[in-house]
Amino acid sequence: MSSAKSLAQRSVQEKLLLAGGAATFALCSSNVVEAGIVSAQGTPILSKPTRVTTWDVDGDSTPDFGVDLGGGDAYLTEQNGGRIVRTTGANFAKLSAGFLVGSAMIGHDFSAAPFRFEITYDRSIGSISAGGFTEGVAGFFGFKFTSGANTYYGWAEMIVVPTGDFGYEITRAYYNNTPGTTIAVGDTGATVPEPSTCALALLAAGGAAAYRRRKPAAV
Image 1 (spheres, rainbow, N blue to C red):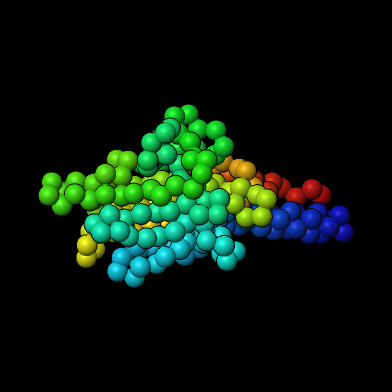
Image 2 (cartoon, rainbow, N blue to C red):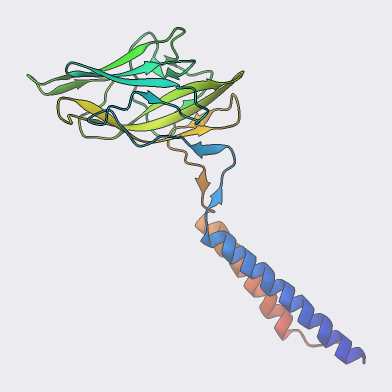
């Protein structure tokens, strides 16, 4: 009886270890969603030829930015609390991946009053004037917007493209839906466990199961 009971207990323990290993494998095989980071509504946005006129980042029916064109230039207009990160006192700021968009930024800020950011294309010399953006090359900019009494921070990827006369495309954008919380440019909310961590976890789970199989049953 004692031997049969011991075997049954060992069987249950091994099943639990195997289940733990399977859970670890599932964790290492899939992305873990980072809470708070969500994809913005309405992207991609092509300023021309579709002539989208507004961008409502969070889909609350209140436009946060205006998308408009004028002659050979393209504009992104701040509306209803929507603001774009700029170099202090300047027009537009191209940001690097990892830049922290939030309430306090060294060398960068948001305009106090609504501002129209202008992206100019000079066809005579083939150059772009938009805070470091280069025609046809994706770059990042940061933004904030308000919803109710709350402020949210985000980032967007943009490509300056001379479609027809001239325009730009906002290919993707993300924001942190926790009010007032900083977001790193390039953060999409998906994190993958470190390969070394996964390997150690799987090794530990497999080793424990093997040890249980080899351990002699108590008599």
